[in-house]
Image 1: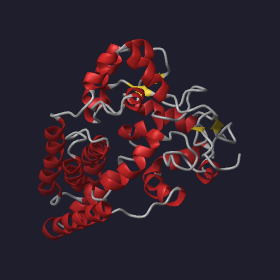
Image 2: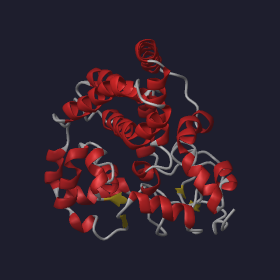
Image 3: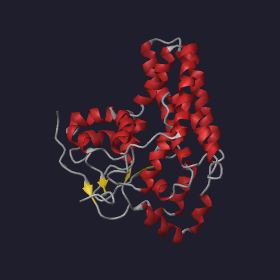
Length: 321
């Protein structure tokens, strides 16, 4: 089973999440960053091109062998679908059309969601904004692994399977840890997705549907682009709970690697996050960062000092210590 992790509990802290205070310090020194707030007019065209690429792939995949279907799903379709998930992440922050046009953002989220195969755009927003506001909260922040995950996947082999199964944890963990009643827009999202999936199966066959859904799931697990799930908040250096990555995979993930910058300024579109770092380098160059998402996955699996326990947690208000 490999080495057992050296931690037996999460890293508990009684301080507030670090981004609000750093945001205040940065804006006091560099108020011009506020000019970056808003939305990205280029975003809708980039995300639409990704959706259209996957629609073209429907015609390509339907005549391929099953072996080629899975290869394309992992190496190509899954990457695009993961990028579309991160497009939904941008949309969750209203960065497609701005805060003044919430309906336009939601509708575009439905559109970007189509090739992913699973309705997630609205549900993701419902939980993700709380992750920003209550980072590390043991109940509200559903990005945190549960004790059961940490106890079960506590060896090298266990962590390998935990990484592979990440999509299942991301889908079902919020429903168990912090269940919320479904919203009307979630139901709309589900109906639209079901209609799209039915059309795909009817006119292109199940092979194409497998390409879309399996690609989405594979690219959330043991996959280079999925390295950001672990790189963002797992504690590789004691006391640091958010990490940025400045490598080339940012080009296809809407700069989600600029994660400290994103948490400091969630109102800044992904395309402009490098400008935040350029304006205020002393706030970002001096804290730990990652150079490779693939390396992050390797280190997470093989390093006994890192694992599901390697997260900073905060007691939920109102709960007993």
